[in-house]
Image 1 (tube, one colour):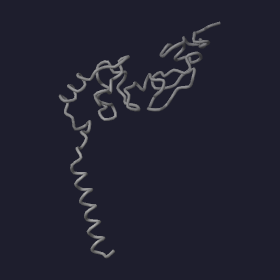
Image 2: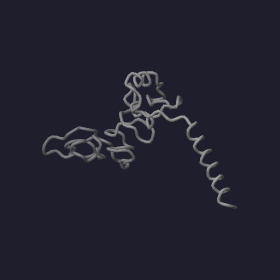
Image 3: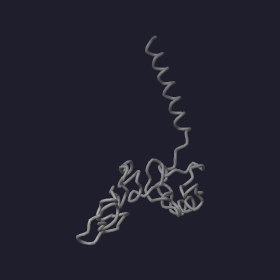
Length: 142
C-alpha cells in the first residue's frame, strides 16, 4: 500500500468521524439552564413512591443537581443519581458513599451509635444532662 492510499484512507476515517461528532446533539449542562427554566423543570417533575424523584422523564440529579432542591425531594444532595440529605442519610452520611455501620445512625453528617452516644442518646440531637451516661439509648438508665 503506497503512501497516497494510506493518506486517503486516514482522511476518509477522519472526515467520517468529524461528520458523526458534529451531527450528534450536545447534552444541555445543568449550569446552562437559566433559573426560570429550572423552576419549570423542577415544578413539572413528578414525584415517585415515597417522595423520591421519578426518573421516568429522563431527569436525573446527576445531569441536573438542582432537581434535588425541588419540593418533596428527599434532600438537596445528589448521590448515585438519587437525591439525599448527607446530614441524615445512613447510606451517604457526611458525603456520598459513606455508609454507617449496623447500629449507627447519621446525625449531622456523622455516624453515631444512639445506644451509647451522650450527644445523640436514643436519636439525633438528644443530649444527656451533664454527668448522665447514655445506656441502651436512654440517659441515666440505672
